[in-house]
Image 1 (cartoon, rainbow, N blue to C red):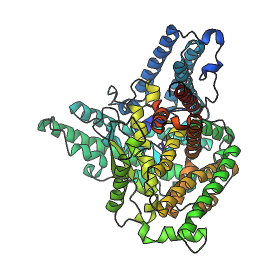
Image 2: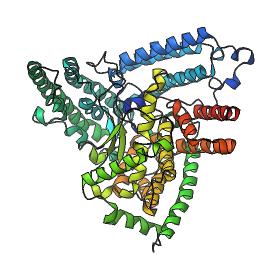
Image 3: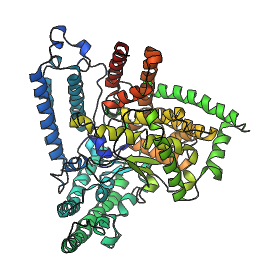
Image 4: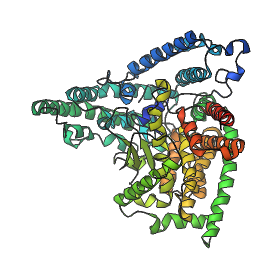
Amino acid sequence: MSLYPNPTCRPARRCLFGARLLLVCAAVFAVANSAVADPSNATPSTATVPSTEAAQRLHDLFEREWAFRLAEDPLLATSVGVADWDHLMPDVSLAAQRRRVARWRKFLQESAAIDGSRLSPEEQVNQAIFENQLRGFVEAFDIGHYRLPLTVDDGFHIAFARLPNEMPLADVAGYEAYIARLRAFPAYVDQHIALLREGLEHGMTLPKVVLEGYDVTISSHVVERPEDSLFYAPLQKFPASISPENRDILERAGRTAIDGSVVVGYRRFLQFMRQEYMPGARQSLGASEFPDGAAYYGQRIRFFTTLDLSAEEIHQIGISEVARIRQEMEAIIREVEFEGSFADFLAFLRSDPRFYAKTPEGLLKEASYLAKKMDGKLPSLFKRLPRMPYGVEPVPDHLAPKYTTGRYVGSAPGSTQPGYYWVNTYALETRPLYVLPALTLHEAVPGHHLQIALSQERDDLPPFRRYSYLSAFGEGWGLYSEWLGIEAGMYPDPYSRFGRLTYEMWRACRLVVDTGIHAKGWSRQRVIDYMASNTALSLHEVTTETDRYISWPGQALAYKLGELKIRQLRHEAEEALGSDFDLRDFHDTVLAGGSVPLSVLEQIVAQWIKSQRQHP
């Protein structure tokens, strides 16, 4: 778990070191139409006189606050390539969180004392994003979000299981730091148990219905022999630079740490979950059932969408998009001359063996082929491409049964590891090939890998921007990337085109069902029925995704709302520039500033259009 207000992602969403911790550095970015972010609203007498002294004060503040973040969250530090605290785990106790929030309030006061009107437009954007990050940290604490350090497919214990792949293990010091973190795990578990117990006391838990089978993510690590633990993997293959004598010492220390700390910690957490948390979890589903639940859900909407929209407004946008996409899907059904209803066509797609890989290797090979095919299209769509490569791997076995269909996993700057496009090979009969092109474009390129790797390589941005991940921007870009595949020729047949539409429909349905669950009292079965009747997702995927939305209020809203904004801005640029519109320049402009609030993205594109008109 990170110290910051978003426990996972898409992950999340990006949910590991690198990608995951890009996400957790982000917070509420509701800066829509902010006077600070928009230089046209600044006081005329001073806005034209940028002050170097004010900018220096601002960047000094940025540096001090970033140093504070890294010292407070050693996992974040590791993820961005800072090794000073590689031997430590974060302190997530309530007392430590209160102390951090108090410090963030003081940082906010310092920023407010710097006159934004005396900053350049670019620095005004930096200041606005910085302040809204910190406000997000404070708001999340104030609404008690720390009581929910788990979602249905992620949590502190799941992130910890990625430690062997994410630690810099190049020398003895790296291994010693890794083993020190293994030893620290029981205390880390105890702190999270205390937070979860407070959640039980306040009625802020995951719903009981989504916790069925969740304990496999814990029990998989309660092993009889250290050699059976995934944490033992780094002790089986040392770098050549480590002497045989040191290897023996490290291997023995690692075995002791796994047996005496890691397994002990997971066993303790498993006992707590089975004996206290799961029996005591709430029966209700929606965040509206929390104490002051409407305010909680409203904050989650602002956090994930960066927009000032009500649950009802989002619900209606979703209904409209579902109707529009349904018409396009019906047109494809007529094109293939299928005889039967829409429901019959979905049943056909879910059951016909031609649409499913026969082996996990077959699914991974198809995903790899699609990823490589899209690699070849990138120069026609972008001028700037990242240096970091990516690979294709299966979702780890200990996660796969309750995990989403695919995910991108980033790497830390300076790491010897690439980014990874994870493909879930569990239950192959539920992983249709007709959605694989859209999934690949979203998670790999031109989606999350390209977007996140480019952001990490922008060393001219302040770190709090370079390593932040906003769901509205990131997931919006991922869904836009699926749509971009039409122009790239990635959907050569009607079934893959229907697969893309079913993924778009999936994201439109999310607007309806997320608000339905958390603001309108929808039941789990109603959500499952709505998703199953409108998309060609497998019923297994429909169920796991439903539980994800129940456990992660608001996150599912980011995808469609972000994609609609990016497509709107592209349309406006095409209309304004006509034959002078350059798609590659547009894409580079959208990605150039890293992950930004949608209101800031509007300003960036507007400024680009203006510059293109002046200098075509």
